[in-house]
Length: 98
Image (tube, rainbow, N blue to C red):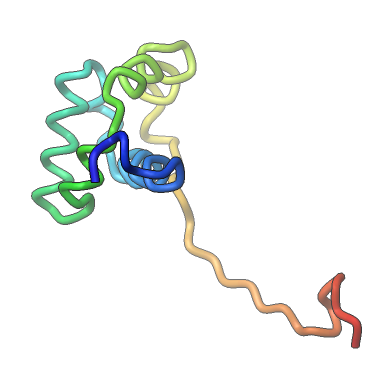
C-alpha cells in the first residue's frame, strides 16, 4: 500500500494515529518528525505501512505554523484524546421509531 494506492481514510487514520502519539517536544523539524515516526513504529504504535503514508512536509508545515508552535510551547497543558463511554437507550435515540 503506497501513498498512491491508499484511500484518504487510510492516510487520515495514519496521520491521526501519528498525531495522537507524537512527542510534542519533538516536532521542531521534518527530520525530528521522521525520527518520531520511526520511534512509534518500533514501539508498535504505528505500522510500517502507516509510516509510509505520512506526509512529513505537511506535518512539518503544521508544526512550524503559529498554531503548531503554540501547541508545542504549551505541551504540558495539551490533553489528547480522552477515553469515554456513552450508553444510549433506543427510546432516547432521536431516530428511534419505538
